[in-house]
Image (cartoon, rainbow, N blue to C red; front, side, top):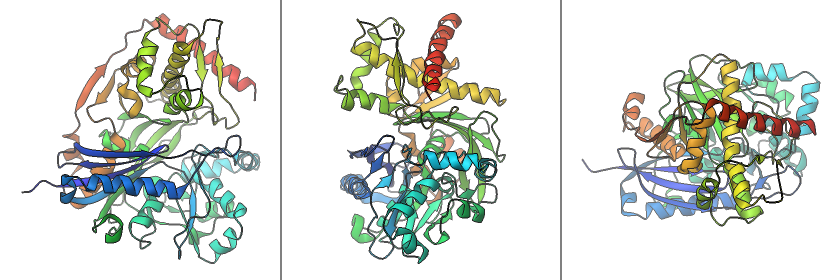
Length: 493
């Protein structure tokens, strides 16, 4: 039987990638293109949807031009979640820029809704908190601030989507307006217990139901790509938000299995099975995946800035040329020399949920240099993850180990720091781009290339195992310094 391949579209916060996977789940060819970030005001983050589409399309065409592309049998999509945009159903044109998940412009509205005592109802239905991170208030802002948008939406002329829906619309030539349950669950508009868009939430956020996409399983029939788009018609067979896709790619299918992904942000996700656990420590209850109409839930902690801190060192401060330089710079020091970076550039995520917090560096001295700043940025990833792990432990669940993935953890210093600060063994897989693996896996399930989650588990392979090496007092001293830094950031609010 001839070898077959699946195209995974991995649309992230700073770049779009296309990866062809073989029938063993291994990447064969990859193409990637970065795109511009827009910061029009304090706390605002935007993307140009047309530029995103260009990077997606160009990356897909590049990998499909590879000889393996001739045997591509389907497409899976994974995407940056919560990022919100509107487009015209007839002309397919987008209305302005997309509002990115990191954007904080609706913080005041969220605070107002909290003051009006709506958060308990919102959390009970969605598992989420009233925070500008999620899509609903972003969508409301677009409807209110783009001329005629609300009137046009109410007349059924506009479509709302997170990035997955937008890519699907463009791939199918406007024939399919849909999303999957994982992306829907991040909008603040979806009842994760009833598995449907919620009328009370739509009313609260003033969202007309006419703009909403159809919600499907994560492995499902999402239609065929228009042959004029990619050169041939291919079934689009799987969609999941990036963190849920990474959970699938890491084969965290058992209740209690846990992974953490380190990209622009960082996200710790624990599978909780058929039960939607409610956190008492401001973690999120969310849909992990929906297969054959059955929901599996997860508990999630969200860190807004992880790899973005390294990007800031490179593009903002211009003190490094590439991310690859950071490991040697961090290892050039015996310790962090008391320097801590709290990278709250767009607020603090879980478990604090402080949208108005801003970043700060503590412990600077006359001889602080590039190495200290780089190490502080890398260490902040481990400290923020420990904050999430402590919240999970206080909720009564303590993972015995952690699977890690994403671009940052190719850096052995980061991986070892995670094991040291978390105090648990950490496993890195051979294929670290597990968001794309998850998207391809969902498509493989839908297309019948694999028959079960157990088949997928057989594919997972460990690259490195990191065990804690720090002495307990050294670990606690570092955490005391971190907690003091976070406390000082929060005290300025």
